[in-house]
Length: 288
Image 1 (cartoon, rainbow, N blue to C red):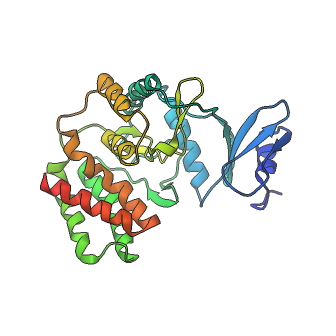
Image 2: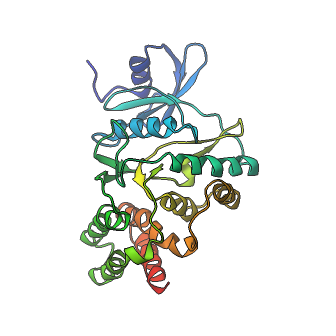
């Protein structure tokens, strides 16, 4: 009988059928576990109902594009997942340029709709520890407002992180999204939580992406999040992206619009500082 009380080593052995010979046995997540023969894997416990299924589906959907590499999933159930461990090295300018090319190819592989979940992934998914609903839509400005900005704005107001009077600033951005969003684009296949911590610079010189909140969205959202939290050689990443798939004119003016989503998620999870950043981004977007 399987219980949530098993440790990562036990879960890894059960899910892969391989004998564990080393590694950590704490209940932290993710942790490294070593199999007989010396192979080391990563074992992660889901943070909520459907979290593992969403992450596994996201990794497989991103990997299926044949663009940016992701760790292979070696086994999973509703509570645990086992993936390949990626040996890492220092960030490299050449790898950054290749990552930009590959990220453009990933986005270009597309999605059935804005908000589309990965095949086999749940509608009720997560971005980090925050719930994220994958409800499809055909029009990016309307979908982004309804499913990516306003739910977290309401949660932040309910928590007292954003004051009711301040919420009107972000609501005005939502109202003006049709004019602020730039030229219409088809749904892109997004990583969805693309901050530097989810970018692994492989020792082999190739980038891997982990911990996706994958869905169909606007490709500039991934780029804006990567820029928001910083990334080594970001200029080279963006240069590679532009070489492979040039962005519509005016992207710099739209960065704050796309950063509203991750900033409000962080405001809900981590407090007032991120709310102030979201308000600053909204005011800048309205000012043009």
